[in-house]
Image (cartoon, rainbow, N blue to C red):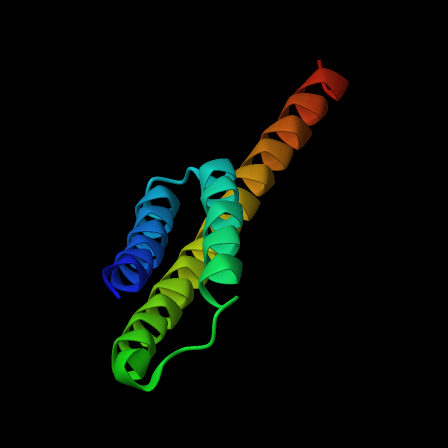
Length: 103
């Protein structure tokens, strides 16, 4: 069943690509690649997992879960950084307004 092993590798590659995109802050690309990965998952599991491939499937799924957790951590961090940037912009706006009121 080489096509099944190829499909598993493609799932893992897609997950790794999502992680690289998240690390680069390319969140729209993460979403697009995630949608593609979901299609691959749906296609792969249209057919039941055979006993002889269950170990490989389990390993890939565990790795994908680890990658998902890393992506989630990057998303939380990115969201925090965005919040800090927005806070700095708001603080700058308040400073400009205060200056304008006192001149």
